[in-house]
Image (spheres, rainbow, N blue to C red):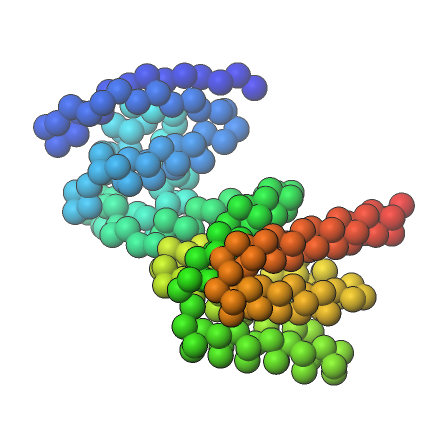
Length: 256
């Protein structure tokens, strides 16, 4: 499918804005329009408190149909970046951490084939979280992490699923960084990981390895060993990647 490059100037509310270049793919045109509008909200081109240009204006500027503009609006309303006010127009909403993180969750929800890329994100992100936690975690944080590990151990002995505790561990680690963006990003990752955790935690030996990985991270945190904590987390994620690969292979073999 061909790509169409559109170069245009925005003239909004009496101001001239810089030139923008947009590549619009025929099939996913509304998604790319939504992404561009989102960027305009972030950079202040579309300021809070002022309505967006009309559908007619945006249709002309983007060179797309009104249907594409409306679909883009719906996407952005779903993740809380836009609000339509009857008789007044469509307005950007106040930006929050959750609203900035939501597009990632939306993308992963509809593209399940990106699990390998998600693991790459975890390798980049979670060791850095562990590294920061090693210098910022308090005694209360260590107590929370230990309670989660103890609960995992109890469920392991009973042969019960510990998916709740597995998720809670990574959330508690994020909280110990004292960074709200990190906490929100981790919450999004945890939401995206629910299905893969359900599958891998059913594998023989997986729950025990999960606990071992968590214990290695906490041991490094207690030593205030930032690099050791990052390394332990990276190794933990590598183990998960190996198990996910094994699970995928088994499912493919069962399907033959």
